[in-house]
Amino acid sequence: MSPMSPQKMAARGRRAKRIVDGLLLLDKPTGMTSNAALQRVKWLFQARKAGHTGSLDPLASGVLPLCFGQATKLSGYLLDSDKSYRVTACFGARTDTADADGEIVERCEPGTVSEAQLQAAVEGLRGEIDQIPPMYSALKKDGVRLYELARAGQEVVREPRRVTIHELEIEAYDPRRPVLTVRCSKGTYVRTLVEDLARACGSLAYVECLRRTRVGSLTDQRIWRLDEIEAAAEAGQEALDALLLPADQAIADWPAVELGAHEAYYLRQGHAVAAAGQGRSPGRVRLYGEGHGFLGIGEVLGDGRVAPKRLMVNAESGA
Image (cartoon, rainbow, N blue to C red; front, side):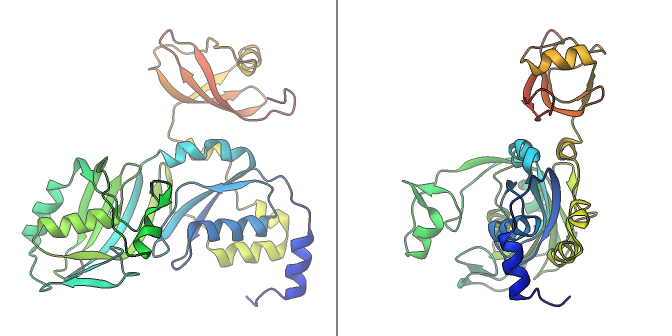
């Protein structure tokens, strides 16, 4: 596709922002920050409100859910969800950033880790583990981003953080560049996981290639590249909006509760209501109402009633 002319870009930049609601699954390209990708897509949609749901490093590619309008109310739940990755580790060296974007600061003999050694290390890192966040991260120390301190040549003490490695498997063994699959809790640094894995094998390693394949229930089975989104923008707003998923797809793996018109009305007033169906376990649920579709997020209480937690705007109620 030919690049957009400066005249077209200027004209599009002058258009008024519009209300866009929904979820876009972006295939973030390598070499771009998550925020830069978000701002580019937000500009293409001319959307008033948008946000991403958890940064990917510039080196990483894959699933980056972008929430528009009402869907931004669900972004925090995607941030809290488990993530899955496919990672290629490069054994024989360590970099200052723990990935291929950094400078090599230490080397060791490559190709010395056997499959049995790697498997044992993998098994030892499953479950709940403590991670020390890397210096090249967005966490703050005394109000300053760690990566800013790292770029200034400083290293500070970081407190370990408890994370959960639900799954960690060897997809393809290679003594120099094994490919691993990971499913982990929020806050997990795959770069640190690879370094810890190499340390358990008596070696050094960094992340050479990283792709996120899943965020919660959202996978990379059909996600949109930037060039595809740009092509849709050339075709018009209808083509762009056809790329969006309904907001409730962000939590499609949660239990659903259907409410009658009476119950939906009082729930929107902030009241806990009785819902059809017994025996639900307490916890978060998706709420739907007659004729109104997705209402938002509710919580099943101990007595079986459903209380509102995060509701979508409704044209009739203004909630």
